[in-house]
Image (cartoon, rainbow, N blue to C red; front, side, top):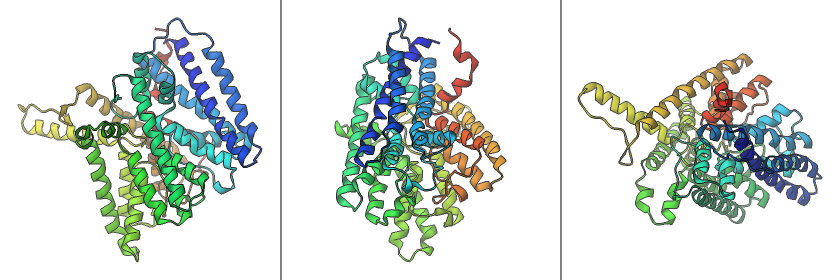
Amino acid sequence: MNYRAVSYVLGKIFLVVGALMLLPITVSFYYSEGLTIAFLVPSALLLFLGILLVAKKPKDRSIFTKEGLVICGLSWILMSAFGALPFLISGAVPHYIDAFFETCSGFSTTGATIITEIEALPKSILFWRSFTHWIGGMGILSFMIALIPKSESHSMYIMKAEVPGPKAGKVVSKIQTSTRILYVIYCSLTLIEALILFFFTKMRFFDAVTTAFSTAGTGGFAVKNASILSYNSPTIEWILIVFMFLFGVNFNLYFFVLIRRFSSAFKDEEFWTYVSLNLISVVLITLNIAGSYENIADAIRDAAFNVNAIMSTTGFCTVDFNTWNTFSKLLLVALMFVGGSVGSTGGGMKVTRIMLYFKEMHADIKKALNPNAITKVRMNGNVVEKKVLTGINSYLIIYLGILLGSMLIISINGFDTPTTVTSVISCLNNVGPGLEMIGPTGNYASFSLLSKIVFCFDMLAGRLELFPILILFAPRTYKLK
């Protein structure tokens, strides 16, 4: 492994994260909170380490698959470790592991929390908490690539390690230009949502901005104890339903619409599968819960909000779905596995993977019935390469292994089965809420120290599609050649 090249790129990442950490200081000044030191210390530390690591360019700057995965895994762990310091220094979260959990949840866009009194936190801490969602939504490495010129081939290896989905893609030929375009779309959608929430509802500007950050990153950290329910506004809920859906769509499709390649955007199989699953789930849940509502419009809104909150893995809440019928709760749990689209900020296994599993299963059944048949798995009219199918099958095996292993460790707490099972499902798929103790009105504060460490591993592994985190535990990774 090229250690010098890895440390050089990590240094650039430290500089970016250190600079971003200065933004909450302006919030602290504005609200006269006196928490400058809570952000200045970790920011200065990151900037110092960054300058130290980039002071001398390595002679060999070769970055390939292994280096890309290591950079990705280490950078997310380290920025979570440093990102936890403002919580600790400010006293908002008194224990480091709890602060690390909260920050991992933020950067991984999970939205799981150990904080019980959210409204008691200083505004600058609440801003940083939601801002970690926004940073993690598109990825810090992608942000770095968009800002800093790099070799195209080297950038692609880094991007492949961080971008979720079976295959990393580009909207234009140059990876840096491609990343910049996607970031412009990401920033534009975030700004539009914040402005709509501020000007068309009674939401305060601070709340509108932080809510937009959390929606854009599909994370779900709110600045109110009761999440979005606190605003008691159907208008806000419908606005968030629309934007949660939009951020769960592949961002490449927005680019195709902008350049008038409408056929590429609206003939995408994944998009229509995402839309279909969403609408069918809303209809089924509405029919299942309608009997407990006086107004069918309220049932539709609650069903649509929670389906989009879970499927996009945003995790906002407007109702305690623990009180819903078993069918609706199990359907929401199933949607946790599906998640958003490839190339979106959503978590989960991704719609494309689920589609490919079913397409491959169909091809295998067809082959079993007619051994002489030539079967091909296709997406959008193109034959899916064998290595892609092999990759998603390997992903599934490892995914299930981590899922079951984590459940066994978490079960040591002795909590009920729905809590134990859905806590792991929620963290590994970057959703946030689950059932029973960790439902929309609950949190993760009661779990043991060991459980929180496991959850941190699951959240980061889930956000980075497993391999960038797992490779850090392989001894062969650290061999020079």
